[in-house]
Amino acid sequence: MNAYVVIIERAEDGGYGAWSPDLPGCVALGETRREALAEMREAIAFHLEGLREAGEPVPAPKAVGVDLIAA
Image (cartoon, rainbow, N blue to C red; front, side, top):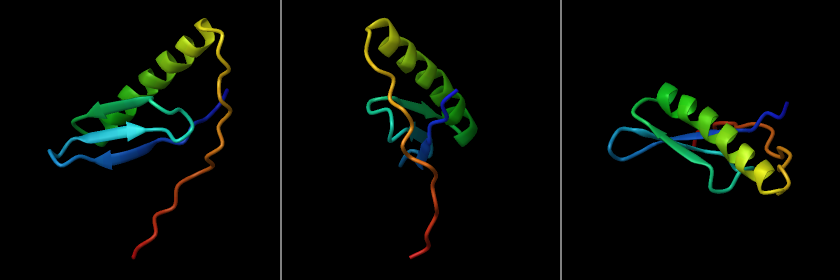
């Protein structure tokens, strides 16, 4: 089983967006961080299923983590 890094960002409207650097175009939205992450889990599963059905390669995860750096 692959594990993909997911980035969660706060939107200007107060909601949240999620995306994965290893899966371009695979995104999700939610009103809360938890909801955005749950939607992203479903989006990743759907995205990978679509790649497999189309005979496309499933990308191996390359991102290994996220660090927060205060500036």
